[in-house]
Image (cartoon, rainbow, N blue to C red; front, top):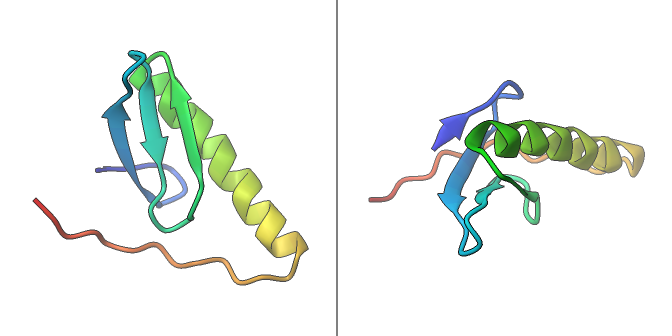
Length: 71
């Protein structure tokens, strides 16, 4: 798990196509990818910003970040 600038925890993994896949557990459906780890994290930063912007435009609550426990 990686914490990025927006202070959201993200899950970063290798996809079957060789790309890095990154998702935000606290924002359902907020997923992105990139050829490199850095590109994937930059892409998810943008996705998080847009996701939150849409929620705010709709006057919907922004979910708090969650801590995942697991092994």
